[in-house]
Amino acid sequence: MGTAPIETGSFQIGCAQSPDFIIADSGSADMGPYPLGADTPVSHEVWQRHDLQVMLLEARRLGVPMVVGSCSDTGTNRGVEQYRRLIGEIAKQHGLAPFRLAAIRSEVPVEELKARVRGGTRLEGLNGRPDADLETLERTDRTVAVMGAEPIQKALADGADVVICGRSCDAAIFAAALLHAGHSKANAFFAGKAMECASFCGEPYMAKESIMGRIEEDGVYVSALHPDQRCTPASVAGHAMYERINPYRETVPGGYLDMTHCRYEQVDEKTTKVTGQTFVEDKTYKIKIEGSGKVAERRLFIIGIRDPYTIAHIDQVIDWAKARLNERCGPIGVDYDVYYHVYGRNAVMGDMDPGPTHPPHELGVVVEVTCKDGDRAEQICHMAGFNLFYARLPDVKGTAGTAAMLADEVLTARAAYLWTLNHVMRVDDPLAFTATEFYTIQG
Image 1 (cartoon, helix red, strand yellow):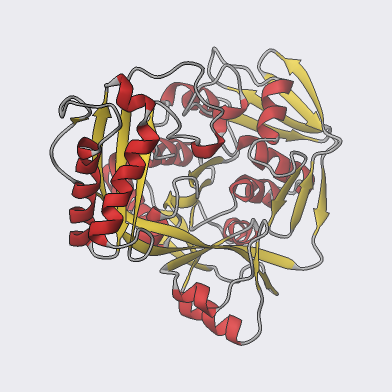
Image 2: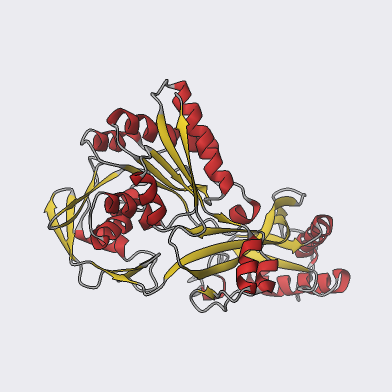
């Protein structure tokens, strides 16, 4: 939610079926390290308010709990407080009867992590990363713990009508409500995995539409709600394997969902039934920690190239431009870096690009410079861009027509941040790193 407005048509179709819970994921690490490190949302508040209002009004009308995970994109304390404010404003605007809101915060002070590491606690790197040490934490500006289902379950058990969460495991947001209702971890977490991206598990592809999940004794049922969309064995299985290192395993706090023996069956035009999933408990409970730190300021310059000879020799042009920077500004990579992103050739995939089947007739070059000093970054970026005009190539006798500027200006971009933590830490209590506070919202 929040990245674009929820489509209300399919949402209302679902609400007409009297659901027991209304749940949405509002965050991710997909947008990169900048929003977490700078503690700023990606989604515009107008869209966030729209989505919260659509959900809240129906949840209160139906008298069912509403759960939102990873508030305001990154799930920092700022995001949770923003959503608490918005929900209060919406309740007041619409004169809603009083209800209980649980705010679960999961931002972790970097100093707390340092103290744990000094005390001998291991901050274990994921996917081949080395364990985090104090030097890693020194480069980290902000961290969040990715909560599992347990804090949300407890909030529901304690009578919350609305639960807004800090950074949350995507599948756990949905699983928590189903576990609270008494279902197995296998079924609850499979439903969570299937539903985390809403209509992405249906076909044809549609964004921002709603889906319905249902658990019966004989399996998990996932149904598309948009009139023109279906949940099929292919679409549900495809999403279950989506973004996985192992396509049959979904790791969550406390264990993993094993989908090796899942069976997907079309039971009606819009619904797929899933059976065969199991849940494997971990011997120790681990919570993922995400952290980000600022690296440098960033500046951009945009150049277009239409000349076929320059296009054919673009690598030599860029090498010439870099050589002049080395001469005039000092070695690249010491206190600044420069990147020439060549759109129309391989700007998206870089060295992994298989190469064009025919030469492009036009290229766009985005020059990116990073430097801790913003003024110096601007000066270097301007020079790095203009060097593409000045580059001298063999056999070229003229001085014009090699490149064109979108505008003769350096553009100020967001600062460069780096993921510093993609790690897990063993804890004795699943509620570790979370703090829940209840509020009575007076409409």
